[in-house]
Length: 292
Image (cartoon, rainbow, N blue to C red):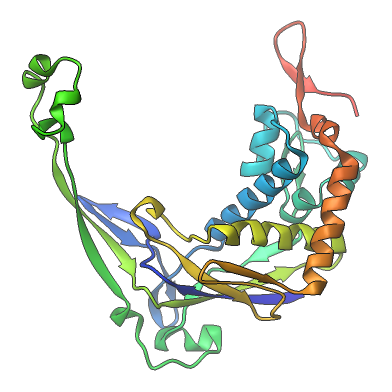
């Protein structure tokens, strides 16, 4: 099953691919039609993983260990001898649809996910054969650079009175004020991204996906520098099941039912189920998995 997400930027968006001197430049990829700017599928997948994790922890009203935190928010890691543990994988997939959907490293095993995120391509003339969407615009007309100044406020005489020892500050090194530039795609730019769900994706996993989207859409931001006002967007899945427009989230009845079923499932698991991911200390100081 494939869905397409369409994003419309309400503010400039920055997604840095490389830096040179004091400049940061938008991520681009080579296509048969030349280089085009993109937002990587992995970065959007990371946003969704964080939102799914936040939704789960808010639902259970619980704090977790560092190991569990990394699995939920970062996809975990591998820190032991790899092994195939079918029963362990089955238990995790049944208990945590969000982890089953996105996959991750679970200490001694890698669990494959069931969702594939494509790059988000701008809708423009150069990507028409990739997106299938006609546009007369060139991405070159949608990209620009913006300069910022990083200042040392301790040199501001109206503010320096709040420094504990202003005399010592006078002897400190000179201001580190500097100019830097960031390349961005313009407000109004539209991106499209394909999301593919592999065969075997369950209704609970789809509920976890929609719950994560709903959480993300509460504060819809893409790319970096959100503190500077970058990255605000509207978005809609092509099936119309969930969207966000001007900060207002719309969810269809079918999607809401999937979310509620998923939430009921997580409540039944309870906070104690998350202990499954914790480690225990051996006498020699090394860590080992808790018994199943």
